[in-house]
Length: 68
Image (cartoon, rainbow, N blue to C red; front, side, top):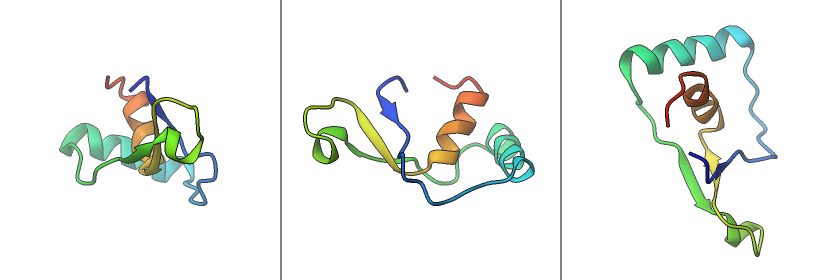
């Protein structure tokens, strides 16, 4: 996950309770939706890695769960 970058203009917000529920759900049931990425060079020329275009909260939850 080191080459994944969160989308800086994510319009979605989650309160702590909702986020903690997502963490618990992923921990107990696994993933039910993918994290969608795009080559970072396509939106920021010269940058390497991938930018998350859908799934910022899922990626943050993966970090909390220490998924690699």
